[in-house]
Image (cartoon, rainbow, N blue to C red; front, side, top):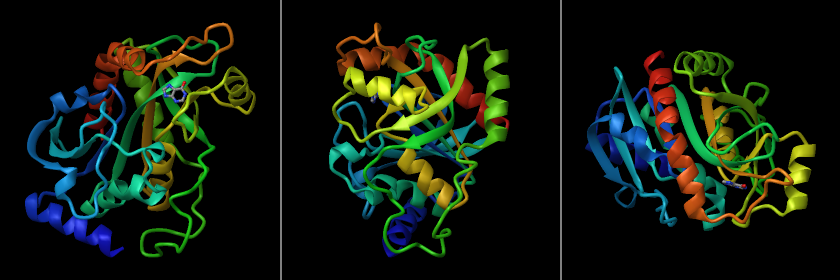
Length: 269
Ligand code: HPA
């Protein structure tokens, strides 16, 4: 708890204004930041106890500013379990953002498709998840002041936000799916047999993030909205060798739509 308080106090000394919404941007999906009127940007390395990004495609800083009419805090660069962080480190920034005062969390990520109807660069609003991560950020002593020992997960992704996002996507004529996200530890991608298995157990898309952050958000009662960009197809017959450049290119193609969707959704809150 004291690490969370120390990081929060440091940030509040640098930037005293309370952000209302927290945003975490996934691989290749950073351009929402260009829509933010930036007041202050703080490098992760300057914040006490903050982990530091190691993946090249993520730059690490917290950005404070205004999006639409709302004060937001944006994580430019997130942490993944495969980088070697503990789950508590991966989710530390979500605890801090909640302590800073955010009331809703918005997340994007890159994911492989499992649903055969999906195409490259499609958007999928996450309406539920399956957690295949090997550890939970909630394991160990419960942070009682932050939330219950056994958090309910029947409302993991806020239904009202999903409904609003579907309306906005329809208005903007952005093709948008809804589905179940499976979170795996990575960093290797799936074998063909694993993609098939993840489909059989009920997944529509698979990726290496988002669920740890969602668990911590829900532990603290923070409503969460998350959307995946389909960056590769994990459907038998469509599976190709993956490289990070293709993933980023597919994410880039979807980025304008994703950015508009997030921006308008946040403007509605
Ligand atoms: N599998 C797991 N994680 C991913 C994928 C995938 O196919 N694409 C982007 N992140």
